[in-house]
Length: 151
Image (cartoon, rainbow, N blue to C red; front, side, top):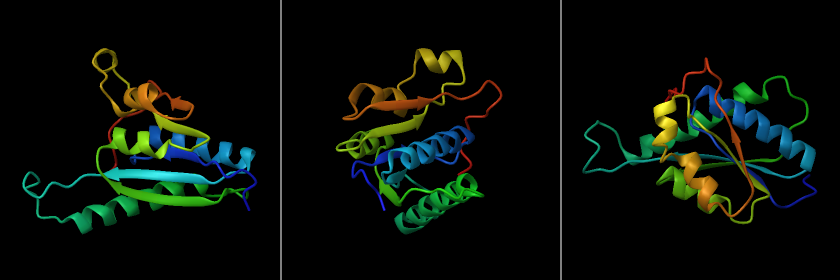
């Protein structure tokens, strides 16, 4: 049972960097004795998304992505925090900013693996660094780590 009610919130997107952020957040939640909220954000616009999919399929894919990430990161761990899974439709930056309200901290991966991308960032991590309501931990990608999502 958690001793601290303020959760550690982590955004996941299926990338190796995201898995590293999730692993870091799991460890931090265990140390703090608080819950871990694992957030994956998905989008579906019926008039824009011409693929043969539905909002329900996108949500199911989001939930599966979260479970797979948790399975990879939690494999072999004996200490695990209480975990709340959140699959939310919307803009990733805005959802994570909102999720940071009342949180102990927000953990994200940077995905800035390229100098050009660093200059024109406009990314989710940069948005939450500027607008989050809790302290932020940004896990950097490694030089050899692809930033492409597995989803």
